[in-house]
Length: 94
Image (cartoon, rainbow, N blue to C red; front, top):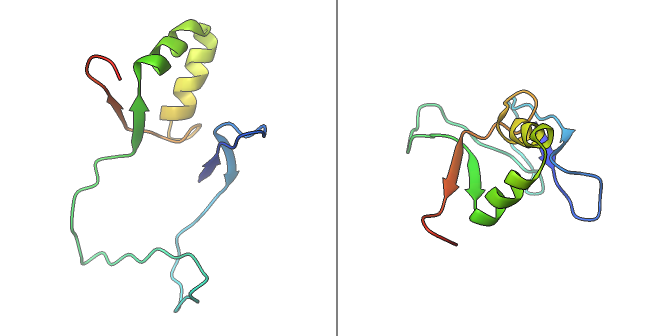
């Protein structure tokens, strides 16, 4: 799934495409590709997430409970949102 947020548009965490990984021959240099070799492992993958600042938390606290639910769903729900599993926050103030 591809979600897009773009300035000066109506796109705000908007589902804009759906991608599927599949076997593919030798790509051209101009084709974006992901190469996966399941026999090679380098590190563990814990999850994907973003950062939360004190300013974003304050803004979040000021919106309605309905909007808070929508924001949380769009960030953390794996079916209806982008499926974040991690959040980084600062200590004291940023």
